[in-house]
Amino acid sequence: MPEPLNHLFPPITPLRHGMMPVDDIHTIYWEEVGNPNGVPVIFLHGGPGAGLSPQHRRFFDPQHYRVILFDQRGAGKSTPLGETRQNTTQLLIEDIERLREHFGIEKWLVFGGSWGSTLALAYGEAHPSRCLGFVLRGIFLCTPLEIDWFMDGAQWFHPEIHEEFAAPIPPEERNDLLQAYYKRIMDEDPSVHWPAVRAWSRFEGRRVFLLPQPEELPSDTLDLGVGRLEAHYMAHLGFFEEEQLLRGLDRIAHLPAVIVQGRYDVICPPFTAWRLHKRWPGSIVKMIPDAGHGAMEVGISRALVAATEQFKRLNRFE
Image (cartoon, rainbow, N blue to C red; front, side, top):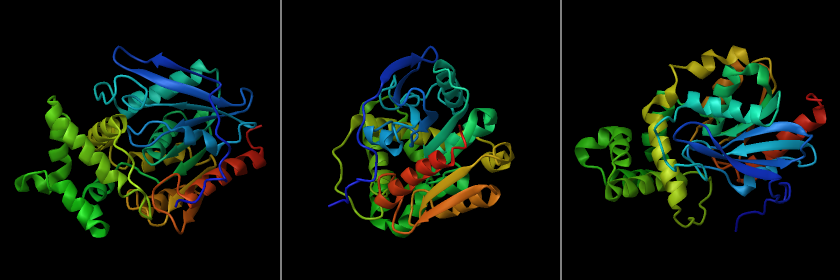
C-alpha cells in the first residue's frame, strides 16, 4: 500500500473559483485557496494537459499562503478540452498575467512541476519583476534531447511498455513515434484519435512512479488533455527557440529557487535538473534518492512541502 501523505497540509476547499474567458476559443478554470491576505503563489500543473487535482492545494500552509491554481488551456475543467488551436506557451504566459491582474497581485511565488516547471521558467523569464522565487519539480526544458528521451529512451528501462506503445504504429513509421502519434491524435475521427490519446496517456502514466502503482481507472478528461496537448507541445518543441530557457536564465538568476528532483525519474531525468542548477547560482537542488517523477511520491511531496515552509520561515517575501 502507498505510504499515507500525512506530511501534506489537510484537504482544503477553495475560497472561490470561477471561469475566465481568455480569447474567442478558450475559457480557463481557476480557484483561490488559503489566506486572502497571505503570500501569493501561482501553481502551474504538469502535462501539458494534466490539469489540477485537489491534492495540489496541500503543498501550502493555508494560514500563510494565498494560492491561485488554474487549469491551462485545453486541460481539466477549462474549455474546450484538448483544444490545440490558440494554445502555445506564449499564450499560457499571457493567461498567467491575466490571472495576476484579476486577483490584484503584484508579485508571487511560482510553483510548478514537470511541464509546470517549464512554464514557470518561461513565465519568470518573460516577467521577472512579477516573481518572488520558484519551487520547481521534475525539471523539463522541452529540448529535442529530452523529447527524444521521453519517446524512445523509455525502452532502456521499460522495454515492454515502449513495445506496447509502438505496437499500433506500422513498422515503417516507428522511427518517428512522435510524428506518428501526433498525426493520429490530431485526426478528427474519434475512432482514430481516442485509441491514440489513451495509448499516449498510459505510456506516460505507467512510468511516473519509481515503484509500481495500481493503475487508475481510465479518464477521458486526462487522456484527451494529456495525449493531445503533450503531443502538440512536443511536436512544436514547446514553442521555444533552441536552449531558450537556459539562455534566458540570467533574467531570474537573482531570485531564490528550490529544485526537487527524483533520482530515478525516467520521464524527466536528473541531468536536466542538474544543468539548470549549475546555471542558477542561488538555486538549491534536492535530489530525492528513492523517487521517480510523481509529485505525490512520499520523498518528493515531503520535499515540496519543506520548500514552501522554508520560504515561509525566511520571511523574504514580507
